[in-house]
Image 1 (cartoon, one colour):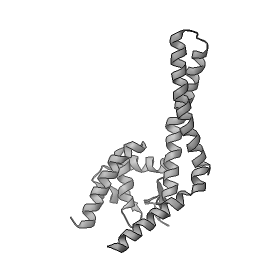
Image 2 (cartoon, helix red, strand yellow):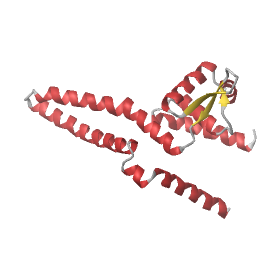
Image 3 (cartoon, one colour):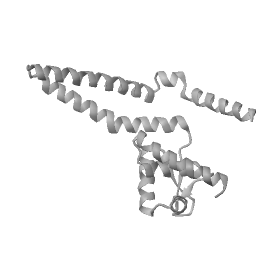
Image 4 (cartoon, helix red, strand yellow):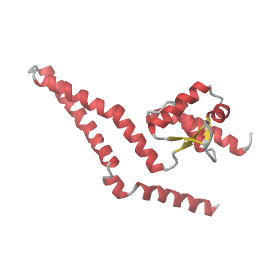
Length: 181
């Protein structure tokens, strides 16, 4: 295995292990990482071969990545063959992940918490009061995280600080480190 192939393998495996922290299945995260490591968009056969995954698993991963906005499905002119191009704009990828996590996790959690708090408002027992207050504390914390996510997605403070500036700064730091080698 060449050095780049070995590094690609390690990157894909590591990225796959991180996917679950972002709410992305490990196989899906591995497909995304593999696509990032490729110089051009790839078809499903190349992904199957490169990752030694089943065609069905690749198809499911590609569909999930498309739903997350992390892969773009393209057709070559005059061809029915589909290729997958990864989203490489880091800011957009992060926004897509935050938006999907918010929709899948925080929105339903907040709705349930608010419903339970409302139901407990009609109860006067000491147990109900303690439970209601604890639920309100959870709702306040999740609500704050949700508001920050909303602000980020709508171009609030994080955008004003400039995620692109942060990314550019990280790239400059990387460039300086490479220059010292």
